Image (cartoon, rainbow, N blue to C red; front, side):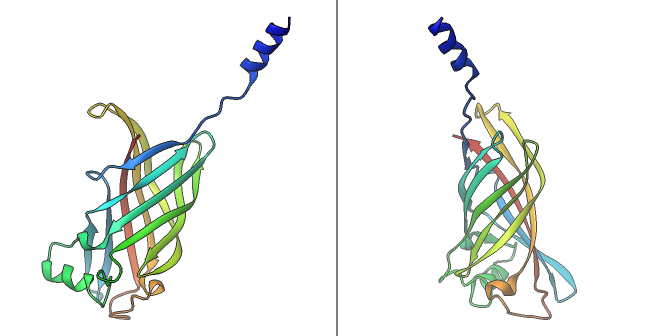
Length: 186
């Protein structure tokens, strides 16, 4: 009888689900930016080197992300423009070679990530941002034989908040970011 009771208690015990850990996939992870240039045209570019670690638990609806962006990996399609953006007027990449995002909360709808809140470190300053998921999905990657999760996230920020005031007000303060990220389950 004691064995039967112990077995029934064991079967009734809640299953603990741990967060799954993911490493960003360099072939499918980029940070894009766009800003209106003096009211004339939209200037776009991206950072090609983005790496980090993400953990999330769909069951518990929690997560954690630490992402690093190599500022010198900027690519606008114009070497001269890239050099200007990396210099003292904008990203000051020699003094601040990376930007960092560290999450403070994952916001879920069901078991899908709908937004990630966190702190963005840029130019040595830290300010909160919210990355809204345009889409989020997980799938079994047949080539890697592993689960891959990711999506597209968007936000807008005021560059002056991080001390980037060059060209204001002609070059608008608002910068749109799109983060395309995929992580491979470890």
